[in-house]
Image (cartoon, rainbow, N blue to C red; front, top):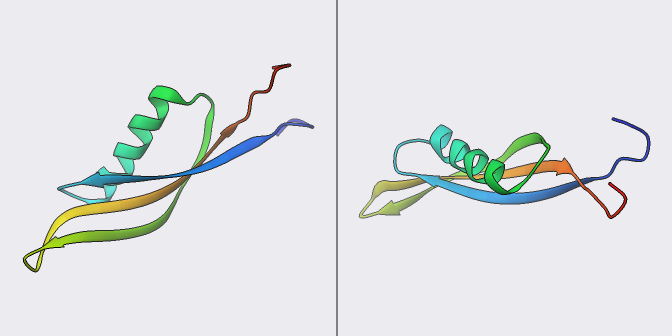
Length: 73
């Protein structure tokens, strides 16, 4: 990390009908379309949404960090 760099951290929740791994991939795939210079993806929480006592959806809360670009960048 260069001296003076600043990084922003956001949390996103991804979903999948098949797996937690796919839920995480959903977050990464979507984030890379609108954010530049992603650095770290940290899975913070995994859970499932239930319907009639069965898993209906896998959910992953992911913390992402990326380089913050100010006016001088």
